[in-house]
Image 1 (cartoon, rainbow, N blue to C red):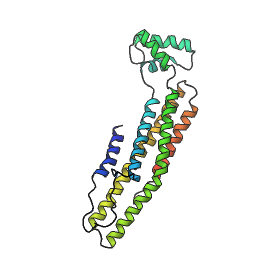
Image 2 (image 1 turned 45 degrees about the vertical axis):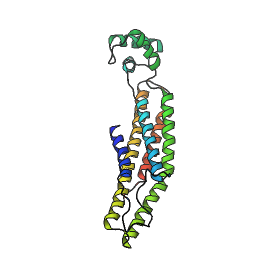
Image 3 (image 1 turned 120 degrees about the vertical axis):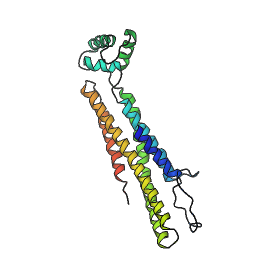
Image 4 (image 1 turned 90 degrees about the vertical axis):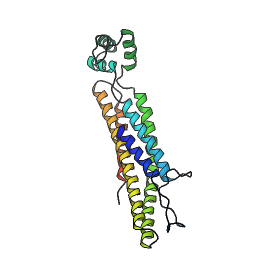
Length: 238
């Protein structure tokens, strides 16, 4: 999560460090990145879409992770292999005696057990998976236009430099800016793909420990990871 925040911060910083074009640039189309322009721009749209995808992928990981005292006790008792009644008796005892990493009261333990007899809540996973899928669809739809625009900015900067309309420094600054934008975008997508793959691994672990009905979830999160990685592969450096 810390690395993701750094990536998103980099996307914002590239937008905040722009300088307005100096003479002799006045009168020409400004090629600087305007992520905070009042009017919608491909960069501004992509920034919001990437943030939404990153947050959804992070939630997907959290909701597919085995955690909590009752979960630990359930794993120790083999929930999903023994009968529900036998498992419940075992886990209640484990919770009271401290097995599973925590000592909880018997009443609280039973409440937790009822909620966590399934190691993972499939409905939560489906909800966050759908959100992540929708946000990735937005990213995948917007990405080609953004990359094309960046290519055009680079071409325009090169032509203006060749014509003597902008300085070498100005040309290099535009190039570095676009490279920085692409690097931040690529890293954000890499992290989201890794999150989706981690969620798929978490679900596989739950299935291996006895929870049934997760085949679709495992496959869907794996496909999401592949699709995000495919979008990442579209980004190249100059």
